[in-house]
Length: 106
Image (spheres, rainbow, N blue to C red):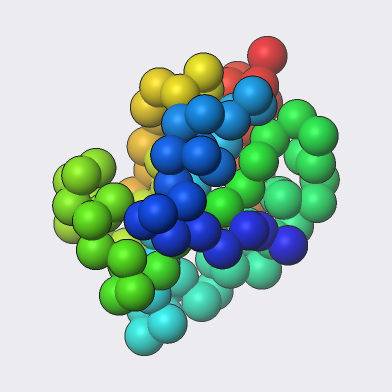
């Protein structure tokens, strides 16, 4: 399962992480977010120990989405060594996300 984080824990869980991080920005009312959610949880399990997977509810946490210019959801941000290295907007097939993750965790 992906870890739910908030504005207060973002720096510790993402920027200061020793492993690459996939951040899923989502909201309860977002249909594509709900359809992507099981895929995000699967990726969390499949890449355990190689990639941290976290979720940020944009309705409950507004500072972090603004800081990273999140305008549409779902938006996935990929961080490595505390730096934003990639971004995906909209629901994507699992295979495309796996390819992207594999290129980041090398």
